[in-house]
Length: 121
Length: 211
Image (cartoon, chains in turn brown, orange):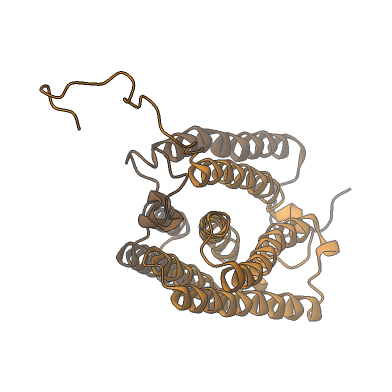
């Protein structure tokens, strides 16, 4: 591909913009966030089910945004962005997950885990 | 171009392009900026990890926890301000596709106003908490909470400045290759803030509220 003397507006990166796609991503993410807020503020479910439900809301909202807004798909123009994201996701998950795992095990062995415990020494 | 009957004159045939067609600058910059966006997400990953290990009951010492001070519907309004700002920025990019300059400027202005609304709601929320004595130095849990949410707010602030710069550049320079490339980078930056906000809203505000 060469765009040296071509109008930059004709570039595929510009032409992939889509009003309908952006609107779809907005509506899906907003509805999922409203649902999560409603579930949490009304305590509609027992705590663990509630946690799973809001995690599902977050997951689908992020997928909708990444697909409809950031144009992460397997089209010829976007495939390398997608590859980079796919390679990135394990780093993101491992950074958070291993840190959390390490500290949760540490706390289990060293901290008094009673909620509302008055002070520690 | 040349059918099999055409006799090719070796002295006149042209085997290369007359002029240098250049790199695909926009694609190269856009991919580079996407690399930046993903490394910025790693910054957020470290802050999420810090919040994760500092949101145990003992992390709040005996002080206030998010369950006591988070107002879910207030923060939902903030969420909508940010999502709408991203949507309106998307409309600016759709106008760019049609070469519609006033459409781009109106979209950027709309995204700017809604982004300022998001930041104003955030600052108002922080002032409410500070007035109630809920400040970062109270406990490790609150430090992590403030750090994560306010780093996101700082990204929004940087994005707002960038939007103002792009308004000026679109008005002054028009749709040159540089300006169009920057509009695309800003689109990714702005949409990425909405993606990170989904994680912050659900896993910090909502989860904190229900814990």
